[in-house]
Length: 77
Image 1 (cartoon, helix red, strand yellow):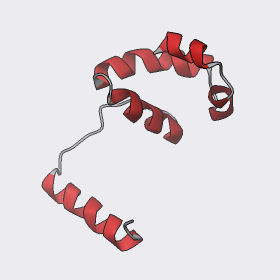
Image 2: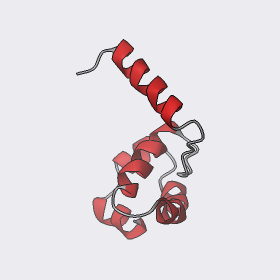
Image 3: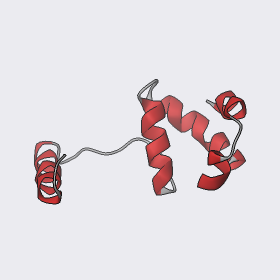
Image 4: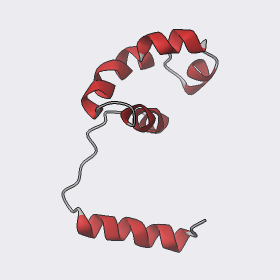
């Protein structure tokens, strides 16, 4: 496992290598980025940005999403 200084060095190197990089995923809350990244591993960022607004409207808090029925969540994604 990397320590804090290792992580900072990696982030700084990535910034140096990719100075104009932007995240195309849309996420108003920090935890939504985690979900969006996971979904983006299965499809395009564009598709994730299309489906997540309805998902987050139905489950507006982390708690509501955590307590949701999996089959209902699946209908949104």
